[in-house]
Each structure stands twice: as C-alpha cells, then as structure tokens.
Length: 286
Ligand code: TA6
Image (cartoon, rainbow, N blue to C red):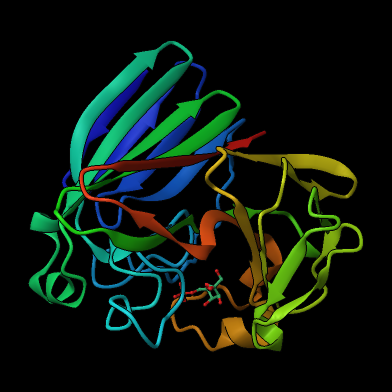
C-alpha cells in the first residue's frame, strides 16, 4: 500500500490497484477507484482550489447539517466549516497489502478566525479514511477540548456514482420515518418500500436501523454500513432544475449519474461534554 502526499492532496493506492484521493481542503475524498471504475461522483465544475466546498466526492459536514436560524451554528455557512477548512495530514495510521488508512486533523486553532468567532468552542477532529480492495471507510472522532459543552451534528455527504439513477433503488429504509425537505422538512411518513429517484429527492431518514443497499438494475452496487452513533441517512438527488441552479454542477445531465446517500447524526443535536469524545463512521462496500 502506498501513500503519497502532494501539495494539496493525499493519494492512497493498494497493490491490487484500488486508489483514493483526498484533498486537504475539507479533507474531501474526491476519488475512489476500484476495478478500474470511479465509485464517487465529482462535478466536472467542482472547485478544488479551496475557495468553496467541493461539489461531489465526500464533503464532511460539521458542526451543523444544513443551515440553522438560531443557536451558535446560525452564523456558520451551510453544512458548517469542516468542508471548507484546510486540514492537516496526521499520517498513515495503518497499512498492509490489503488496507491503508490515513488520518487528517482539524483543530479550533487552525480554523479561520471568522468561524472561530461564529462558533467559539475548543474542539479537535480526527478524520480517518481507510481504503481496502472492496470498501472505503470514513470515520470521525470529535473531541471537546474546552471547558463548556457544545452541540454538534456531523454527516458524510457522499456522492455515489451510478450509471443511471433512473434504474436505482435504495433498500433498507422501509418503515423508517423521514423528513422531506422538498415538502418543508416536517416529519412526513414511513417509507413504504424501496426508495426510487424519479425527480428531486431530499429526505432525512431518522434513526434508520440497519444496512442500506444501493441497487442498480436489480444488482447491489453499494452497501452502506454505519456505526451505532451514525443514526440517520439522507438521500438526495437535485434532479434537473436544482442541478441547473448550482454553478459548480456539471455536466447538466450529471444528476443522472449520482445519488447522495449521506450517513450522519443530524436529526438531533449531539451534546459533547468538556474533555469527552464522540466517534462515528460509515463504510461503503462494493
Ligand atoms: O444533503 C442534502 C442537502 O442538504 C440538500 O438540501 C442540498 O442543499 C445539498 O445538501 C447540497 O448542499 P450544498 O451546500 O453542498 O450545495
């Protein structure tokens, strides 16, 4: 397994040919290749120079999901500051012929002053990305390094690549209550069956119990498993109009080749007491 540090990114590779690429900007995974195929969707117009969040790959949402109108996160940008901050490479934490893991760090001391003022808590994040021949695991450790508790949300905003979203079903969410952002976000209803994408979809499945499978033309292409504290699953596809309204979304038909299956803890606030740690992670398996 090899681990190359470039000026703005880290590249991982396994002897069996799998690779992953992570930008230091936001510690955003921008590529995951296996079997010679790219598994993540990255907009052709994604901005990778650090001036804005990456459109695609796996943006990391912290300390807030979406936008809040009250509370300490209300001054932060949508989805928080982690995905628009410059992380440092902490190093390779494990490597073998069939697995390599690299850790990234972000502390309150290396977040820009504006964000520090807007969200004045002392924290430390360690983000670990592990590549194996059949999976990509992302996990986050949040440490409260101050003397006051803080509330946070976090989510892995994963853009999975598919051949045609019209042939995709998301399984494993049957019976789970979801908040439908296209209907204003109130608690709506239980998911009757598999989730299909026939137009814009933006749903937060609350406390989804188990494994989620992404099926394409009847074949499971991705299996998403989460640790216990990563309770919620957001399913998003902007479809035609919303994707046209995003300047960094390309090509125009790109929405047909992606589905966001985003695992996180976002339906409630997590309160982290001083000097304590929260850990959670997601594994996407092929
Ligand atoms: O995760 C779904 C979502 O919250 C959508 O509502 C949409 O806003 C998407 O995230 C992308 O947000 P972004 O800030 O990356 O444009």
